[in-house]
Amino acid sequence: MKLLKKNQVIIYVIAVMLMVAGYLNYTTTVSEETVQVSSDNSSNVSNNTNIGDARLVSSEVVENNTTNDTNSVNQVSESNVTDNETISDEVETQETNANVDDYFAKSKLERDTMYSQMIETYENVLNSENALETQKQSATEEITKINNTKNSIMISENLLKTKGFENSVIFVNDESISVIIGTEELKEEEIAQIQNIISREMKADIENIHISTK
Image 1: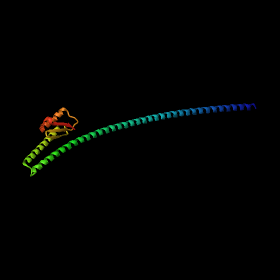
Image 2: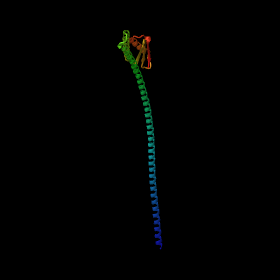
Image 3: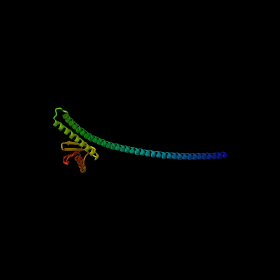
Image 4: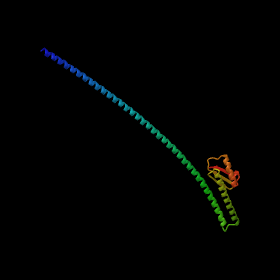
């Protein structure tokens, strides 16, 4: 009977020891799993942090690109405005030059047309059977005078062109001679140069030469 009780005590002690060992083993396993989970969570947190930083950098890059694009658009716009202003100035200059050219061309055409009509009138007198000899003689002299004036004008305008005055037109009214030059202003030496040409080629006095600009 005593031997049976002693064996039961031993079995009881062994059972308790097994339970304690099992508990300790379970505790250790749970702790390791907890540590592993914590480590994994820390790794995930670290990865999430890196992703957040990458997005922030990407956002800054997009913002910088947007700023650069805006600056580029502004620069292009400013460039276009400048180009448009330049083109506008060039067009305006061309239009002004065209108007000046038209003025001189029209003025010369009207002057030459007037001379042609005058010559035609005198030629009609020469060809008229009813005209007196004195009238025909006067008509002949006037025709010669007109042709001489036309030649002198042509030579003078060509000489003025060779001196740098691209546009000029000359009108003669008896002894008075008007010279119009296509420029904004004339220097004193240029005025003297024009006077010398007109005086020499058209046999005119300096005081009868009137120069203006167009």
